[in-house]
Image (tube, rainbow, N blue to C red; front, side, top):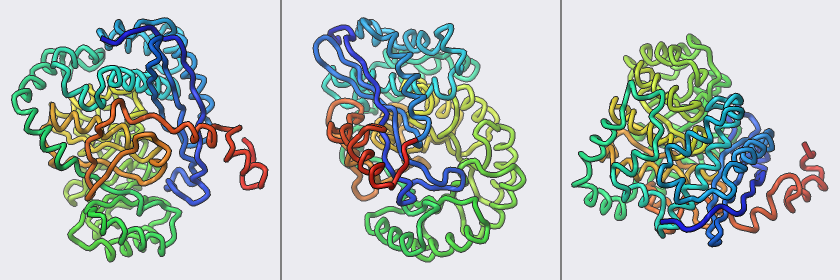
Length: 444
């Protein structure tokens, strides 16, 4: 058991000036500064857990305030009691009678929930001396199900069904864990595809990631159809016809616009179109999917889905072909496990979104649990990889031959280096002050 009560918490606004090089740029988010609200939870035995939720710069201070409101509910809590009935605690913080009005279970307050919950999972895994993926794998089906709140999704999956699914995989888990440790799980790269990159940079990056063993490449589209055609032609020339090419519109289109736009890109054989329209428009996604499936183009979404209920309806309507969970968009590991279970039952492969600060570090753990304990396969399952900000983490993700290798260090891989906090805490961090003084940035 974990020992101790929560004696200290804090949350920091950490931002990186990625907009200076167009890193992360897409049709909707043209100048993002990759950022996070970064949480610490400390126990009386001095054990510390770290968690975060991803943002794009402005507004991170609002998420920080949300984290502070939730963290107040943790003070002096015995973490043994939290982890023994994690679902009940998760419901307590997401259903606080006044705070819930700010969502409920969506938007800033749910982003804040993710940061706090992710820190708790980091704490739990560290207390056991294992990575989060291993903690999840080693939990009994009963223990794992006890972390999940099934409220509002029991019409699709019940606790009893979840237990049955997990028990079916128990006997063969060791074989898959051995495979994971030797081989890892397949990754795709988005690093070639940011909308603000020059043609020269795109060509150079295509060559780089081909040499690193990547066979799946994602490109941002949606700003200008002629430019999309030109860029996709360039990228196909570099990666060849045998490799998979995915495209991502980041919510910019209307329904019919999405269908017509993608028909014009059909010749480039897109494997999927990601976020073709509003992330809340389930029926709109269904119309797009029905129109594009005959062309061999799948529809993917999920990085901006508000909660498990939205995912439930996407699955029920068969409105998407690929589910893209995000480790910091909905309420942390607990809620994400419920999405994996629903997706598995209804036959939708999960391909995690990981384009942001710390997202690669976290989603690898989730997909590794899924491979060992639930889906048991890598078929049509691949994890996004973006090669930036990893150097700021104490235990960064390791990708070899286009495969995520299983973390061996304890926790959720979420701890930032102390120097990063000194340099990039906003607005008083050393690097930010240097940029303000040099006129590179104006303080917001």
